[in-house]
Image (cartoon, one colour):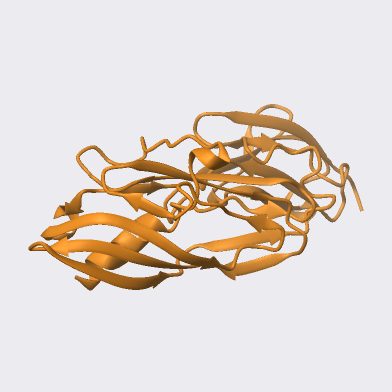
Amino acid sequence: MKKLLLSFALIAIFGITNSFSQCTPNVTCVPVGQTFGICPDSTSGLAIGCVGVPYSQVVSIKVPADGTDFGQPTAQIVDIEIKSISGLAPGLSHACSPTNCKFPKLTNGCALISGTPTAVHNQQIVVTADAHVKIFGIPITQTQTFSKYFSIVNNCVGISDGLDLNAFDVKQNSPNPFSDKTEIVFSSPVVSDVEFKVYNVIGAVVYNNSFKANKGANTITVEANSFAPGVYIYSISNGTKTITKRMIVSSK
């Protein structure tokens, strides 16, 4: 039963707002045959914000009718009710629709966490929710807290300028040319695997590395001592899109 209620709290965590905050549910992330789910999940995570930059994060939920997926088919859901939420970065807020913050069974909802962050922040989001269920017709209310997600805001001045944080985008490395090290800032709309390659002027790969990018702004540091002085082409690919730019390694 505890596992069931914790799972319900997971579903409820982002049932914070729906049409009132002008978001549209999109539960296509839920595997076929699964009656519950949230998007983004704990793997893709929430977008990372920047101080002074307007922030918007939509999360969709799919609420089941019972606990079949959790091994508790006799537990019939009435609704999930959000009692409180804490840990959002200063300047961000949420609202509920319906205003009583109760999300009935067999509904798709969505959350829009929005605002303009005013300070650097890295804190767990703690949600307190009541799961209203019936077991063999007997109503039961179980209060649970859930704290798996984080609200993260960075000081991005000079880092994300000109970067589309809601898309896969790559800035020109800076400084360029460089004789010590340079940084390449890129953005990813979701947590994803990316491949970073560096080519010489004749097209041969002289460096290749794969890693997992965070949602939001990411930084790759390139050391000049890894390359001979000259002109190079670098590319960053997320599997569906590849962006290339030129960098110059100068002599010290």
